[in-house]
Figure 1 (cartoon, rainbow, N blue to C red):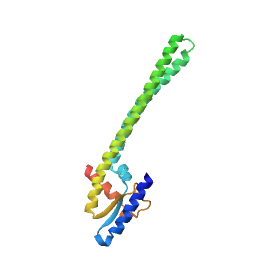
Figure 2 (tube, helix red, strand yellow):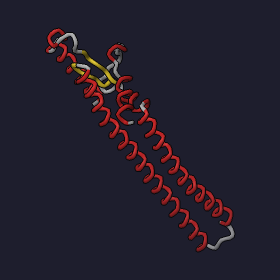
Figure 3 (spheres, helix red, strand yellow):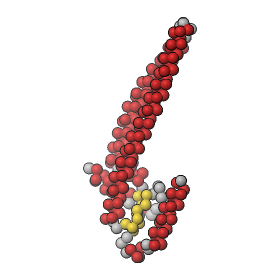
Figure 4 (tube, one colour):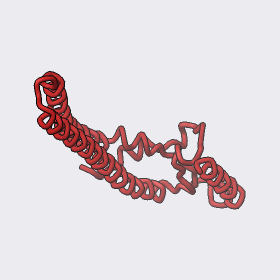
Amino acid sequence: MKRYLSLFFFVVFMVAVTVFPLSAVGADRKIGVVDLQRCLTESIEGKRIFQDLKTKKDGMQRKLDERQEELLKLKDELEKQSMMLSMDAKEGKEKEFDRKRRDFKYLYDDLSNEMKKAEAEARAKMLKELEKVVVDIGEKGLYLMVFERRSGGIMYIDKAIDITDEVIKAYDKMKR
């Protein structure tokens, strides 16, 4: 799929350059490229969101660590008392351990899904805001096109057409 997407962007680029030669639209029109991943990680808002997500993840990890510690204690207790317990008591402890182990797995899965969802929502929100910033820069800067560096399959870009730093500055200014 990614290969086809790269090919698509290459074809669009080639058609645009062929159909709209720079001389036809004026020498003041240009092509730009932005690295949205850098915008996500280097902008003030991106760093803040990353820190918030890290704090949330650390809290979830503490919950998991507490439950895991409970499980280990119960397992040790079961192993130590195994010989001394009656069959019914041993079976009861084993059922309790199995239930807590399943609960731990469900908690782990729930927290993992919650974290993935929070990360995806934060990323989508930022990308939507960054898109507005890029469109604004594109219109004001008289850009013919602005490509996203990673999804466009672009392997080399002359620094002269990379507008990532400009986008980060404008985004930071917008979020103040």
